[in-house]
Length: 451
View 1 (spheres, rainbow, N blue to C red):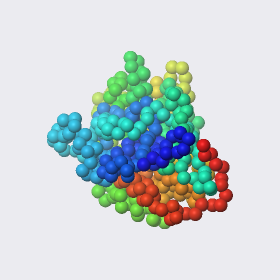
View 2: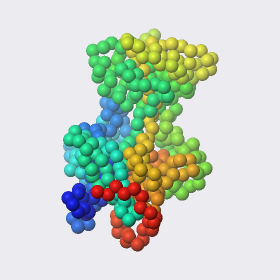
View 3: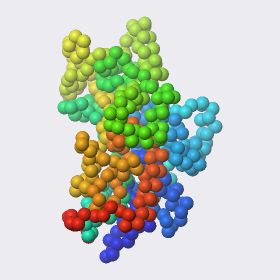
């Protein structure tokens, strides 16, 4: 139950979530299902803030024929509760497509369909989220040397409002990554904005695209642009001889198992590094083998017919890109000969991945009370709670940015359902723990901002 403060101040929520992507949608579902089980007196009060005007998950890459790379059973709930009414199968039933999907004999739905599932699930808990609201600051409320709740300043079209919470669940996702010194522009794109940017070209007749990158998104961009613009040349630039296939074999996929998180968390740092080296090819800079085969088949067919539009500039890298009013001048350097070749293109697309947002970037002085390891990384407990100084009693939980502690599934869908269940259990356990069981606060009060 929310704690009501004197003087007409807004109540203190048990949980506030920052961001409302798939991870925090799953968190809202877990909270909703918990509250339905326990009744009002034991319910957990929660609210989420999302700066987008509506739910959206990689909208710029919802290419019509792109499929998911994880099983539909790794949806928002099934691994935590196979009986949940929020499952992908329940979604299919509600859409009248359950039998059709079964007849399709696949574990991997279209990405656009899975996005529709996410939207369907998010709509079922939309009373717990405020869209168009951005958390712009977090400050501690200190009483008698103890921080027992936080104040969040939230900006919307109506101005700034302060909300209060005992626990934060941060799910702010990933940020598009561009090479150093390269800025996005009208003709220089990141693949995350592909579909929206392509629509802006409607009616035009581009003659050449350059796509930089060697991962799944890069290959999907190449295939999509080749199909979408049948008169244009598509040049793929990467430093390898060719795209590397993703290892989705049964044994390798065990790196995504919930039990693998336990093993990774307790492993020595050297073993953690080895595991990432061994199994990075399950997720990073790799491509589905079927897509690799399709692209090679297309390239070879064009060579036979003498209509080459698909060019692979392998063992090469982009060394320069200059946007001009009517084109982009890209410079491609051979890693073998060192020769540089200029390419004039209508658009250069960088499929160069994403970087996690700084998980503590919003926390201001609260971040100073969070502990870091010898490499400056945030220390995170097994329950995804940030390790903090003893006087900070609030829970700060991370949905992402925990790869160094929890392994490769940090920002992936594979363990989302399990992770939110563990976070909820942690919040409930800490809420039940008597105050005397908590670590004793430090003696001096630090910068009270209580109102």
